[in-house]
Image (cartoon, rainbow, N blue to C red; front, top):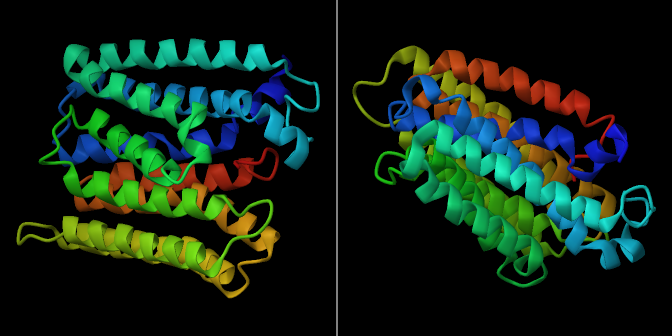
Length: 289
């Protein structure tokens, strides 16, 4: 497997949008893994890449019709090579989870892994698909939080809502969406922004954190919200829907930055914003969808 083909198989630029999930959860839970926090986002990235490789393995027949340029139907990657890569990355993700937090982290990482494989092998072609994918990203937030749903509930809800909207809209990338699915995606984006704003509530929040949250949410609305509004205006245009989906995949970093700022970690939030910019640049070379 050539490096370029592997990067396309796992949609490598999209992986840059993943570390913010577990970091947002970790910040909300007051960094439960201490110096081993780095291993949680690394685990998240491995599991995400595994899911992308597994997705193409499961979709090989469909892609042969709808996306023949993808690595497997084009013959550049063997389907079972993709499956082997997915298995190896899954093992790496679980190992890194154990490094981060031992049994406490594995209690979240194992259900997260099961959710990813369930989505790719079954749920993605059913009505349950968006909900299952949203569950996966919500669990990813809880992975960073050491499995503490009380402290990380709002970040998990925000990321899950965003993911549900993007996944719902992504089903129209090839043939176009419907007004209902475009509306649902836009509503999910509003829910994610509202949950993030709620996470900021409290008299002890610093003024600079409030400003950082406001700036990140404004950027999130200006990118993801505007792209989804364009899809709502012309839902039958597959190109517009595909562009909105790609913007949604990359734009989650704005939401993650806002959540980190709300948790009192503006420096990490700023770094994540820069990572989002890098994802946009990388997406010009390799598609994130």
